[in-house]
Amino acid sequence: MFPSLGGATANGGPGAAAAEPAPAKDGEGLINLCDMLDKPMCYARNENTSYPLGNLFIGDSRLGMQSDADEQLIIHLTFQEFVKVKSIKFSEWNMGANPDMNPVNVHIHINRNNLGFEDIEDVDPAQTITLTAADLQEVSDAIDLYYVKFQRVKSLTFFIEDNAGADITAIGGLQIMGRTVATTNMNDFKKQG
Image (cartoon, rainbow, N blue to C red; front, side, top):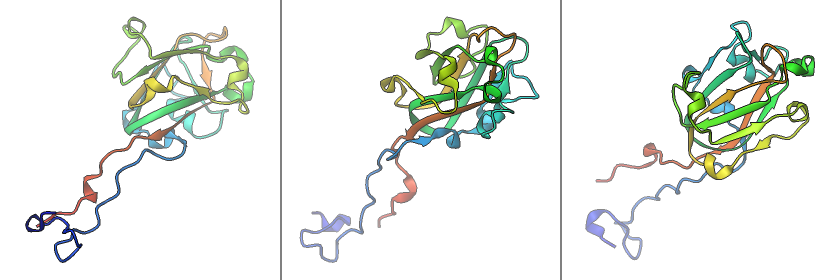
């Protein structure tokens, strides 16, 4: 091509460039994106300090997360990088010991920061899901989201509006399934000349 500029020559001679990095690809398989959370940037509003947000990701539904003053909860999760979210899985608290504490209506917001109870109802969610007791069981499948809307997600905000009738809401666990988004890693490029 242009040997004087360090590009490859037609015959691959002395001016041939070193092998270029392969183009970035989206993450191949679905993974639990909770492993990619930027934990210092995640928060919950109206959480019981004895059952905080961090308990959702340890795998023991007896610990889980509970609301404090009433049944409403806001859970804000920020990822370390942009991701594609395919499905979510809420688990019942304490293996279903208190079914009236299960969340029912959950509004999911994408890439919205600092939503509080005073303004979250004024913002249209990307998707609203209604959970049943069967959806929350450990053996049930994750709930597929509108995949087109969840292609470039940096943060998710869940507004749990109500539960099955108790004074507080309790969640045993949370999984977010998806894949990473292809990005360019500038460290892969080699300095020329």
